Length: 454
Image (cartoon, one colour):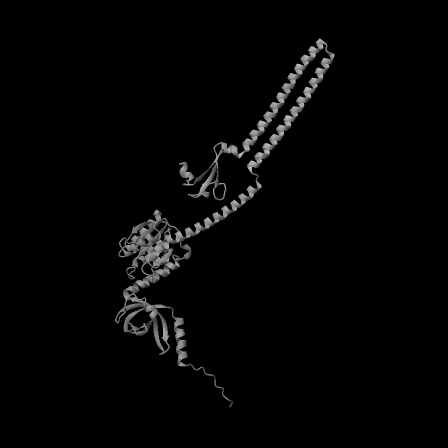
């Protein structure tokens, strides 16, 4: 017979076996709810809780680690009937099957917890928790509505925070019972009424902390649909930070506490004031830079534009030159006419006939009259032209504007022309130029055009 080949054996160690069994258990079972009675309860110094959970026929070892048991709403004891949410596992050190408890409540609260989880899953599938349906909160609400008990601590905390952070907002309180028979229906009806009135920019649905039974009204389906259909943005602030209700999942925003809800809907007036001051500083810097640029441009234009006094001197000089030229022209014409008159007189004297003398004398008188008329007409035309030019010059002259009652105001320090009251401050010195004379004065008050016109 030939040699027999021994197959290679895969030999497990205890540790490996326990580890793989644990992985198999934890990977095969999702978290489940289990109900039973506590026995063999132990609380070592580590902070973990160890106990056995049993029913009439069986029992299983359980552990609740410290990071989970700190959220317990009650102190478990032997003999308590509880409802626990657990994951199936194996303690590798001893190879013992055990349950790792995530949360637990007394059996009565457990029924509420099961109902809560079932409703939560059903509403999530129906789309009531979808983020795309949630509305954004207004940045600066004018009116804030608060739906809560009018006598609870929640309303006092909310009003205190709103007065401190945002006293400009008006607060409208919609009083409702926050627990007890019919509370969910009344809260739902109030949410619908506040939505129909449209008198608020944002709503806060709030109450203080309590047990699962105390928060039962906020875990009802009727309230979930009322919040979902509300068109006004709604913030929930129910219970404490660890409390979650169905209303929290449907609301547009969830706050950990009623006080946190008030902070969520109200801007901080101190932060607003800081932002306004920062923007005001930026605007003032921009205005100063713009004024510097305008002043620079004015200086450039002032250098390019001739001074009105120099323009007046130039026009006046041209008028004098024109007047002298006209005067010389008239003088030459007069001399020429006088020469002609002298020649005619000589011719008359040379001929000396009486009638000729008479005719020539009359003609001389007539010519002399025409000469005087021509001279007068020429002088009148020249005077009229000079007058028109002077009137034109006076029209464009700044001095004429001053003569009509206007004045030119300049800054005493840097000699710049003041065009609007915003360039001045109370207490600054100014120079005011009139048609005749100047005065120095000090600004007392800057008046607003609108108030002054009234």
